[in-house]
Every structure is written in structure tokens, then in C-alpha cells.
Length: 179
Image 1 (spheres, helix red, strand yellow):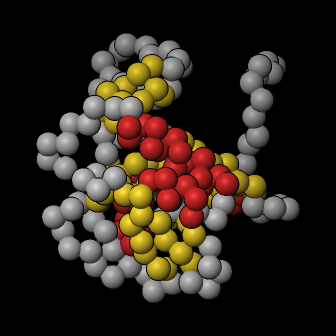
Image 2 (cartoon, helix red, strand yellow; image 1 turned 45 degrees about the vertical axis):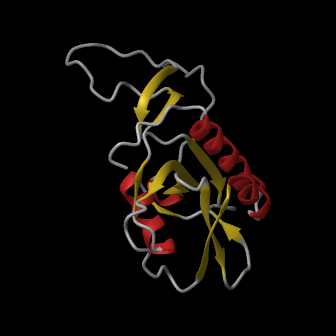
Image 3 (spheres, one colour; image 1 turned 90 degrees about the vertical axis):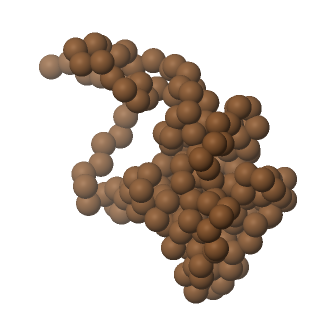
């Protein structure tokens, strides 16, 4: 029996949670949306259970902002968006243009035997023509400048995520037609 050359940890379904979050960007004002949990007073990034649709849904539910994934140029191990049938795509880093893939993943130990929480992070643009609705009552919502967001977030990991998101946002030529 072969042993993998890669380090890994495996979790059964009852021992992991998949989450997804979105860095909400007001493109025209270069502001990010952050939320404050009213009970704990912690400043956070909006996130919730599972995939990109969940990231957008949770961002809307927590902030009241309609948004859509922001296509970016990024280096990723993801296969091409359109794969040619029968062609093999090796597991390698490649540059994708106008990608709507997660740009980062957080692996958080839940403690004890509870397992692991995976948070897939996406970048989304706020639909600026749509009026903001009320978000969840437990959160206070603010749009703040990119640099201010880094300083205001409670957790170091969230600050690192925002720094990477801003780097991707600033380093790409956006095709913002239709956003």
C-alpha cells in the first residue's frame, strides 16, 4: 500500500464545517464592508456556511448589500473555467483572468474532537445601484476605506485576508462593465 508524499489531515463529515466569506468592495469609493457583532463587539468579515453562493447569500444577510463575485486576475491551482473534454490538467499554479474562484482558505481548528472549519474567501463587488436593505440585527454594518479596514478588524487573520484581497483588487485590470 502506497503512502502519500504530502502531509494531510482527514476529517469525517461530522468533524468539519465548510464556510465561505466575501470581502465586499464598493468599487467606486474603494471601501470595504465590515461588520461588528453587537454582543462581542468584535469587528469581522461576513461569512457563513459553504460555497460561493453561500458567500454571497451570507454577505447579503449580514450586511444588506446585494453583491456579485468580482472577476480578478489571480494565480491559483484551480483548473481552467472551461475544460476541454479528454484533456488532462496537471495540478499546478496557473494565472486565471477574470476568475471568480476563492482567493484564500482559512483552516480553523474547532477544538477538541469538534474538528475543523474551512472558510473559503471570495471577493465580491457591491451592486451600487441597489438600495441596501437591513442586515441581521446582531451586526452593525459599516463601509470604510481599505486601510482603515485593516486597522479596525479584530482578528489578525481577518487583517491578513483583507491585505491579500486589496493586493488582488489593486493588481488587476478590472473589466467592470456590467458590475
